[in-house]
Image 1 (cartoon, rainbow, N blue to C red):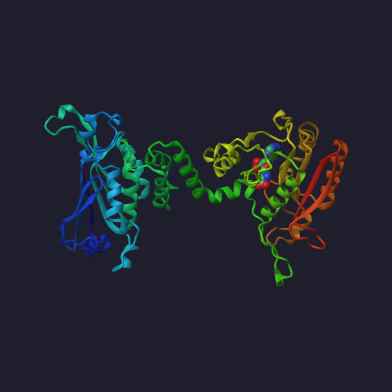
Image 2 (tube, rainbow, N blue to C red):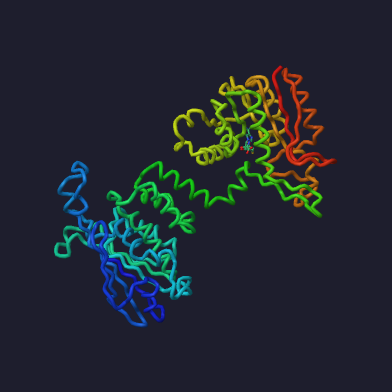
Length: 473
Ligand code: SAH
């Protein structure tokens, strides 16, 4: 198995510094699966090439393994010694690890410098089309040259092999090239992966940092790198999507509604010690705990942040989240890591897709409901339907409902007068409007209600958020 890296940077011999491998010497390393050798087949100030040669020992690989794992002959006679596979990645990390991490004690300035580099992989096993190779490397800025190998040079009629010689050229930092090779070479090889363990996920994510999240083939890369281990794959993807979508999520995933900075002039304004949203959730959890509820439904649960907090309280035996936004539920599912929770935890938890403005039998029989910063997202003509769904049909013993206090908006520095805190808010109530609505609904459906402020209370405009606690009479 042969990988070469060539540079035409001047002086090209700098490659030796970057790789921490002296160009004058041939060095050999014993790895767990065979031997690796580093040599420089060409070296001049104009052009220097380093070669990493791997001698994979298939016999050593099978030693000590259970025989039923694969056919015996296949274990001994296979393409491992010749093709670029996960062994090459392991070798890269072990032999060029310092360069891969972007460290160079003697010449630190070289590390940060994009250099003209060409990596040549002699035999890349590609059980897909040539186009697949391009789709993987080209988005990273490489010019890709591919030659497909015949099965046997002497018998062209036998047709083509699944092995490609691939040359990648780019002006790029050496650490980036090595990292790309480390992550991407195993992606091509469908054979059993040499190194999939739980820490592979962390390796993938740390080596993929800064480029994998934006890669158009990130799903394929991740799935193949993790050898189709679905749980690891899902987690990786979730974390990559998070990395990519921080901004997007902040905009479209309502639950992360950022509170605009407060006016803090002359520090007369008490600063919020915690985010307002966290204070809200803390207040809601406290009320739910005191209510003695054992089953709770979080209506308009968004990304599941409240649910996460509720899960920590053993008192709640059944915690259900519902949201009209499927995307929010997907985010919640991911953030709560439902598929990785121990079963005693996941059994307590359920996510439902549904709308609060339609009667839904699944909402019956809960001790308590939380409706945190949701009501202001409903169209006013649908409010009456929501009231019926919650207070008449679902009818939990306790309902905790929070909503912004519009009066407080004058204190948000960046909020133009007359605007709401979030683009999807259909209205925002003053304290009086909220209390009028809540008193009317409570009276109509046989509840009593009390009101609590959330966040620091201003003498004139009150607190940023308000909470109504309804108890069925
Ligand atoms: N309660 C969460 C999210 C608040 S953002 C929290 O405290 O973080 C408002 C949420 O209400 C969004 O997730 C939105 O999708 C949801 N929502 C809006 N209209 C809804 C409806 N008709 N039925 C159910 N959920 C709704």
